[in-house]
Amino acid sequence: MLIIPVKEGESIDRALKKFKKKFEKTGVVKELRARQQYTKFSVKRREEIKHAVYVAKMKSEEL
Image (cartoon, rainbow, N blue to C red; front, side, top):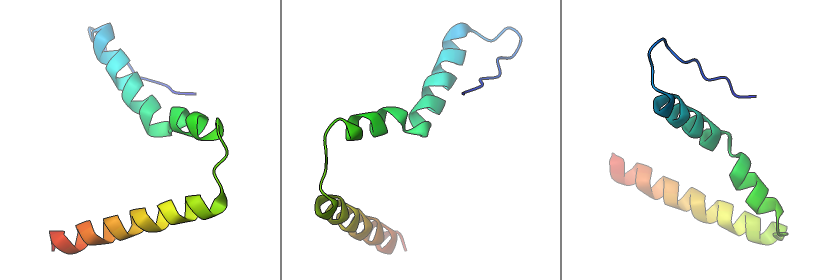
């Protein structure tokens, strides 16, 4: 359950923006979409390795 503290006088648009940001961070929609179709383990693993290589490359360029 998400709890969004709203300060006195704060607009509802601002509170809604906070809610959307928090909801996006939880990853519920991403997980729901992933569960709609089966992905083989080998494909998942390949994507993980691909992402790890990308992250390592970005970190090495940063230094």
